[in-house]
Image 1 (cartoon, one colour):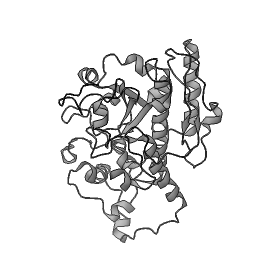
Image 2 (tube, rainbow, N blue to C red):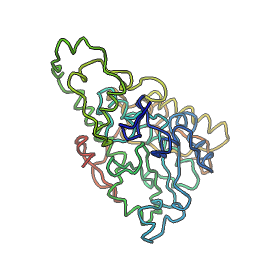
Image 3 (cartoon, helix red, strand yellow):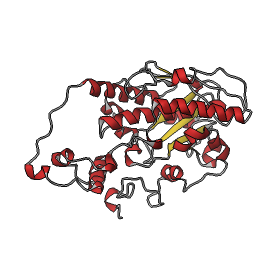
Image 4 (tube, rainbow, N blue to C red):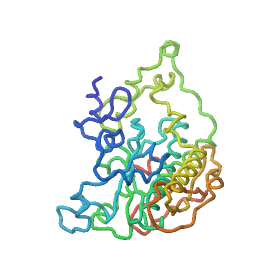
Length: 350
């Protein structure tokens, strides 16, 4: 089906397109249509659980090679550090294209959005912990997203940056680098507010509207993404919003799309089993700010045993991360990255 009206980035099924016109490189990587040379071993290090949900990607070879270049032609284009990777999602549903729209559809999707970002954080830090050429401390690794308007690709990708060897591009792009903890702080605050707010009165619709069948999923998708992707399509009417939400817009609750606390714990155990089976050692970190969908402390901390002490170097083929509940930082992190207070989606867009 034609997706011309949506700028070509979203198809009529609500999925990010994976063609070349327009080119959405991370959607292509996430779909498996684009496989980068030399990334097999690094992706294997994600382990069996994280690997089902996410894919690692790297910059162009010349961008990596010029990470420390001060030449104007490379500042802003080169990699941000000596070691710079991207973590993207295999789920190509349009609502994951950028953190700006996370949770804006429904409370259920907000729950899923928080858990998805927690999973991305865990996957990125666990992966870095088992890579011998990456820092052995999570404090030396930057995890950043670029909010829509500052992002050059319309597909979710987490920048994983070695903070021990940053280059001119890192400083050039500091205003774009939004730390994942700041995004989680905003979304968790919205989740708390939404969960504690009294029920809102339903939007009144006419009897004729109430008897109409659900709005065509493609039309809903087009209207929902219109304001974000700038394609000029009108917003949904109140009547459309009141009708039954089509399956396209409903966050899935099974499979790789939803990462529950139990799934995080399962991933930890599974990845440790892989590491042990391969004879590798496990180096890991503890993560802050993980909560279950119900708002309680994640069970993964107790199941996975909190954090695993460093057991030596070497590639382990997987990792275990325990998650401990802690407050998210709201001040500058000292690395030039913006740390936003838990306000709202408006804060993310500012």
